[in-house]
Amino acid sequence: MKINFNLIIASTFVLTSLTILSSCTTTIEKSPRSQAIIKMKRATDHHSYSKPEVAVVKHLDWSAKVDFDKRIISATASYSIKCSDTAREIIFDIRELDIENITVDGKDATYTIGKEQEFIGSPLKVAITPESNKVSITYKTQPGADAFLWVEGEKPFLFTQSQAILARTWIPCQDSPGIRFTYNASVDVPQGLMALMSAVNPTEKTENGHYDFVMDQPIPSYLLALAVGDVEFRSVGEHTGVYATPDLIDAAEYEFAEMEDLLVAAENLYGKYAWERYDLLVLPAAFPFGGMENPRLTFATPTIIAGDRSLVSLVAHELAHSWSGNLVTNSTWDDFWLNEGFTVYFEQRIMESVYGRDISEMLASLSFKGLVNEVRDIMDQNPNDTHLRLHLQGRNPDDGMTAIAYDKGYLFLRMIEETVGRSKFDSFISKYFSKHAFTVMDTDNFIEYLENNLLQDSTLRKQVNLTAWIDGAGLPDNCPVIKSKRITAVDEAVEKWAKGDINTNSLGWEKWLYQERYRFLKNIPSSVSLEQLEELNSTFNILNTGNNEVLFAWLEQAIKKNHTASYPRLEEFLVNVGRRKFLTPLYKAMLDTDQKEMALHIYSLARPNYHSVATGTMDELLGV
Ligand code: BES
Ligand code: ZN
Image (cartoon, rainbow, N blue to C red):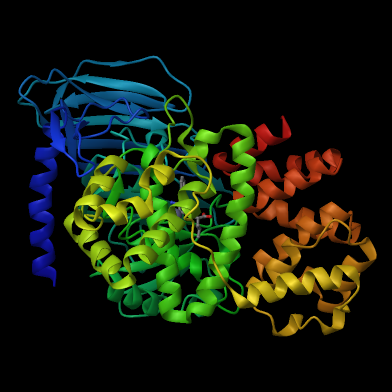
């Protein structure tokens, strides 16, 4: 396997260099949609200043020292570059970095830093010649760098979050998902802490706090990741393992014991796992996301540790990104649905294959409901944001992180699967991944590939109606209907219970899986009284559930109904947990019910613990 694999890498490496250097060529191609279309080989990324067609990075050697007292990383980033015949400069993206010195092939270089723009930062332009090989940038990060979260304490913790365009706040880079490079790193951290990256990782702490890393498969900058903390490693399978702090390592080992099964299921669906190992790092609760698919080492929130392995679909999701996203990468953030829609589809298929269709359909039906609500909200604000193909120029790419990319993307692929049949669809997807491994994909190129390789038949093309999905608003008429008997039963139960036709004791709550409990809580109508709500809590002890999804759904109802007995738990949850998916609806619920004072009070306690990704959203929501 290894030999084959290296061959693939070597050849794609050459291919990518060629494509990137010829990226400006405009080609005229025939599409099966009959008319000739003029298409740029590579879409322009409006969120990066870099010009890869002029000069592009190929490899990074990063040497860094992490200073927890000052909250600064001092580093040198040395890039091997490839230049076109006319190259005069190479452009990097930077934001809030203090550049100290730059050399090109060992000699002091001339450089300029352009004007800073919101979100995207500044272009760092370094003078080169077509013969230049190596650019070395010595710099320091700033304590408030947006990618970082520094957690204080006896055993401090640091993690980075680079996606979408935050890598440039800790490493000068050509910060566009369409540009891939390999990297080596050598990192010094305080003794007693382990450093981990999206690379080959240690499993033990070193005595002197020095760690060396190798990532010899080309990755885009948004997958650069670093974590430093007092963590331990446990193996859970031949290619899988978990890292967590000592207080969580046993629980993590139990919770993620099925990771190898997920990996095997994924390989059986869409081909060999390309990254050798799949490990997972449990981060501090302040992590703003559920998970982040950093290659070889998924970063995950501790809020998925439920004690009963019920929330592993998140692991299936991040694992699926090892194909959709990390192997075949969205060309720009406008094509984000290619990363996330494919990943949700793949996640669903992994869940179905390991846990059965009942479970995967329950999950799909919960997301469907969420999507329908979100489509309604987004339609009120900006209907174009409900298209799969986004237009994020001049905006924060974070704006694209909605249920559209994820769940409309998923439904689009599911609709195609249901139209052409599963076995055809599966071999199409397998081929799609292997053919485009270690390259980029944009929406136009995907459509073309789809039309040429799966939808050659014009009746089929009419049936799927690509335009409605890709560049149309809302959910098209041929959107699949998701049927989960168990969820339908819950929907009926909640209605009857609300009317008093079923009493609390006979709901069957104890036998329900978390998905059913979540759905029940989410669907409680506004007519339900505070007393009825309290009866649920006193009967099932919901406030003490170990499942954070259920707790979240409960807290949202508690806020809506003013269930003050839940407020201490609410405050504790919001102060400890920084996962934005939970924060936004909970703070919103407080605003919607005239409890802004409480929201602001809790936020003042919680804000210092949150990552910039979360404070960015909450500051705006709460107007602080
Ligand atoms: N890659 C995303 C997280 C992300 C997207 C970070 C865009 C920054 C910008 C990750 O794979 C993800 O989708 N996480 C979800 C998990 C879920 C859908 C199972 C999350 O964190 O909620
Ligand atoms: Zn994802």
